Image (cartoon, rainbow, N blue to C red; front, side, top):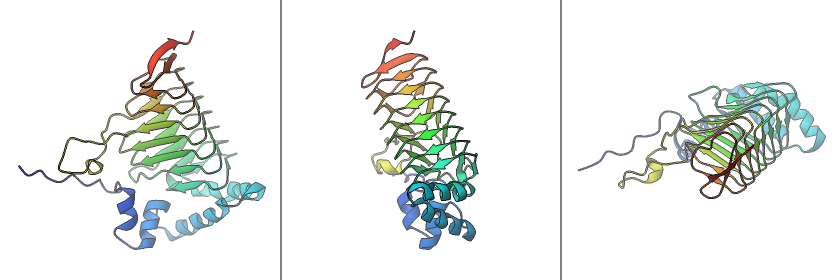
Length: 255
């Protein structure tokens, strides 16, 4: 029996490779994938912000503080942005007050179905080289949460990642909503079968993740829970639980 080919991604949900290389002019593809708008004015302003974004030192910090807030969907007072920060679809990024985005971070808000796929609450602090990616997904990080260096937070295909307030996320963590491909069919590459929708990831308030912790799709970490360094969370963690190991298990509860 002949099986039908996989259903193509919905409008705006094409893989990055095809969106960047197929259809339209090189400029229009650049606007669609990177800028997030076909507006000539937004393209010009984005390019200017890129030039300012590469400047080191106090001058670069001052100029980014002056020009970058207008590039975002919304931006509170007191935001500080380091050098070499990369933003895609900045009009869909919303920043609260006193947010700190350190050098080398990547904020990718590519979800044409929403105007607010990436939200950072007041006083959020992103350390160096943090990557937050929303490819037809959404990421929301609550107030006063800190994210350690080289951490990756990824949301795809309507599997949201929600991080509560006052969370402490250590360096080199990996948090993924939508990390599982459908693999049922053998007549088509797994990468063409789409991503399973399993509810994403929820990390509640006051959670602490040590260095190099992985939180997989479908997991919920309760308020006050702890993920020990190197843990791989594949199942829910109750409130106040201390989880260790690969896969992580509840080793104790905070008293």
